[in-house]
Amino acid sequence: MQEMSKGNLEEKYIPRLLKFYRETVIPKIMEEFSYKNKFEVPRLLKIVVNMGVGQGINDSKLVEKAARDLAVITGQKAKITRAKKPISNFKLKQGVAIGCCVNLRRYRMYDFLDRLITVAMPRIRDFRGFSSRSFDGRGNYTFGMTEQTIFPEIDLDRVERTQGMNITICTSTKEDKTTYVLLKLLGFPFKK
Image 1: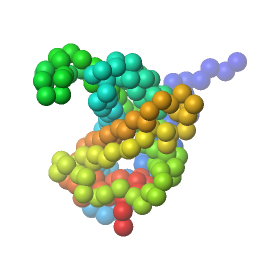
Image 2 (image 1 turned 30 degrees about the horizontal axis):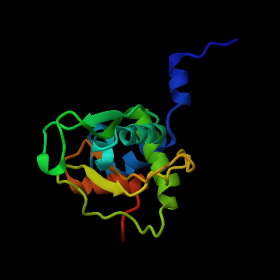
Image 3 (image 1 turned 180 degrees about the horizontal axis):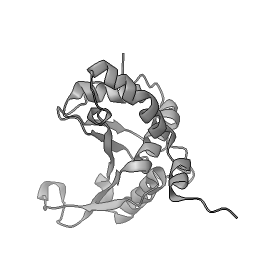
Image 4 (image 1 turned 180 degrees about the vertical axis):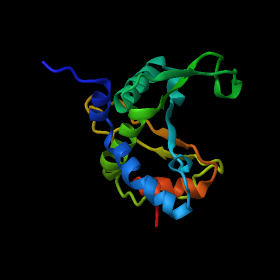
């Protein structure tokens, strides 16, 4: 039996979107912004997926179920977030579980973004694209999803309540224009 070297193994498992970024997106951005070096081209650093569970104050099992769903969607174990301060108006005590989040990097990030663009977004009802005004001025883009059921990994029979999520795409650039061009070339659907 032939042994595979580490280099061959890594080439075999490169995500499809990462290959597309390296072969197609980098040359287009270099031409458009007249970069001389490919390392000047903006790239994705991480994707943060966050689920806030407001009802988690009363029932801690809801947070655990949301964390389980988030782990199934992203392929990585979700971290349960807890309240830092007590807020009496919301009947919130310090240390109570109020949500969950996942930080995706490298191959998992590209796999998640590819599944999000090609599989999950077409399943959204009456979807016309995301707003191009959701940039934060530092090269990051944040948008929200209203249901976790748009992902095919979620078993609809086990879902007791629909749960929304916020997704933040962090890039290496500090300008919104270059982030917009990067996401547009990767296939991200913006409103026209």
